[in-house]
Image (cartoon, one colour):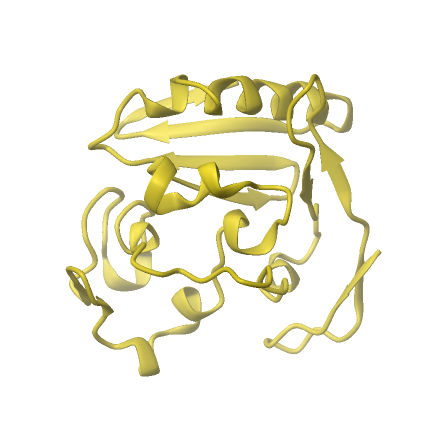
Amino acid sequence: MFTSDCRLGCRGVAVPACRIGTGGGVALQVWPVACYRSAMTMPIVAGRSCGPCTLCCRLPEIDLFDKPADAWCTHCVAGKGCSIYADRPSVCRDFLCLWMTSEDLGAEWEPARSHMMIYGQGPQITVLADPDHPDLWRSEPYHAQLKAWAKGSEAAGGYVIVFWRDEVHKI
């Protein structure tokens, strides 16, 4: 069990950890939470940081900024990061991709290297693939691992979904 004290007011939310994926690959630990806010308080894996990665400023749609998916946020400065970092809204401040919070993901899954951003949403593992690297998610070691996570999550009603541009692929 992981207990979370959410920045948005939840206190001591007990969340059962779930390990997804087998078949010779990495078993990814995710937290299928009822309260999405509590997932945002996951501790960062020691030694990890966003570094030069700014994929979370590009890949997801961010309604607050009227930013469509795959478009750069107007606040993102190439090679530097967020120009409003100190005052960024909670939608940005509270988000951490799974590479930042899951020790189970190796260096090959670092978003700046894999060109994918992965996060959990309840039973779903969402993968946002960089539009400049269309087939990387289909190559190894990524594709076999995505399939293993999908297979490992089926019994609990989970699945893996990959977004690339306007394409949606359920694995």
